[in-house]
Image (cartoon, rainbow, N blue to C red; front, side):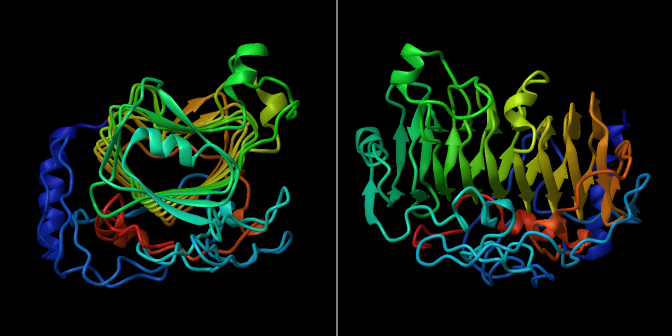
Length: 422
């Protein structure tokens, strides 16, 4: 456990060193404001915030050092052999197999596992090619989600829950907030093919090792939304759902998790989100005894997310393959990455400051923690260098970790997009 009395001094030194100034204090609970105007930093290798975007610029602490753990020296950004990269999509949420680290926060590019050609889909395009509807009420939102037809659903204003803790999302949907204030209040999204009828007749959720008697949900994009007061998870992705992209959302503390991927789901990218004071932030794999469903699945890319005085699970991984890169974690109440049973994790280019620990052990060991990560005032990672190699699936070029405290707060969360990225 680190002595957090150094936190304010460390941030102050960093601000002075870079002559940037801190746009927010180091106290728990502080969050960035966004608005018009210039001042966005120049993009790094992976493309930073679009010109004109603003956000809190966190200073890089003076004397910051890249941190490496045992066996973690694999170089990021290498072009991998093996499975081919995903083909490009078109229209709404078009996915590309760019080697950039996400293409910058305000464009439509998608990299990582959600762009991987597998399970009958070349990539994730959401509602591309379908009708475009704008909804302002819970009833209209539920109706727009009620079938598997391709549809772009633009959410305007605040939509308050209709009583159930979660609203089911079906296949081939793009959900995107309009402007900076689109809000989901009091409920979350269940990206699942396990219907209410199945729950009533068979059991609350799927338990078999393969999908039986239902079709998994696939091809879903969720962007530019703020989730508040979630009565369960903010986003739940279970029951073999695949090809899901969760991008540029803001998550406040929920009753349970913020983004859970579990029960055999696969091919997911979680990018450019802002997690503010969340507790159970990101869960990959829900139970130590669920290997029959999960082994060989649960491939998720987590990149350019802002973990802002959140607590734990960034992510916590069981059985899954997690690629964790270019995330900014500051003021964590507990650990960043949780190593659970059967995990395989590759972490590169992250910037972690003022946390309890970079990792925590929950029965797993396979983590590659490269020397491109920066760790400050935090217990170092425990890594054996045996995490999987993401370049066997796709190419990426991370931004330098030293740029992450500026790039990510300026570009992450709801309000950076407009809702017209369809």
